[in-house]
Image 1 (cartoon, rainbow, N blue to C red):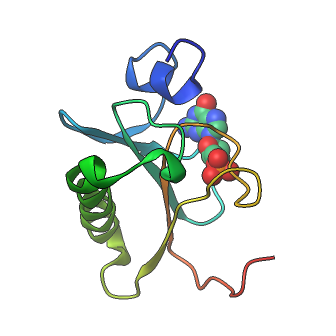
Image 2 (cartoon, helix red, strand yellow):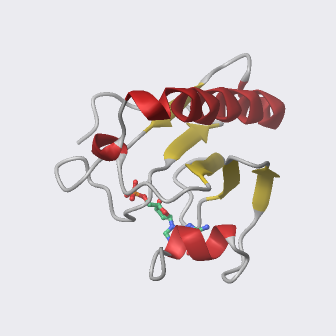
Length: 114
Ligand code: DGP
């Protein structure tokens, strides 16, 4: 999508700290980290948010989560865990309209969210 900031990051038009890339997904550090480990995993295909997905996206959604946990483990979160978050639309506090999984680790997080 032309004006999507994450599509521009995926295309290399906006620089980012890339953690992983394959044919389907892209992972990069969040520009405003909320924990020592904070990165985003996104589909390369533009999908605005989780509500836009359906059965045809099951494999891609599974890959997003599997990539998120694998990278979290590689970045030191395997033993103590991490939080895997998908913010969706306005009530979910989504600010970038390209589906993304936040991975937050490296410190003890509170619950419930505000
Ligand atoms: P959300 O509220 O779930 O839509 O979070 C979007 C996240 O995207 C937010 O934590 C900050 C991050 N972000 C926004 N713009 C950029 C950017 O240009 N580069 C990077 N690396 N992260 C960004």
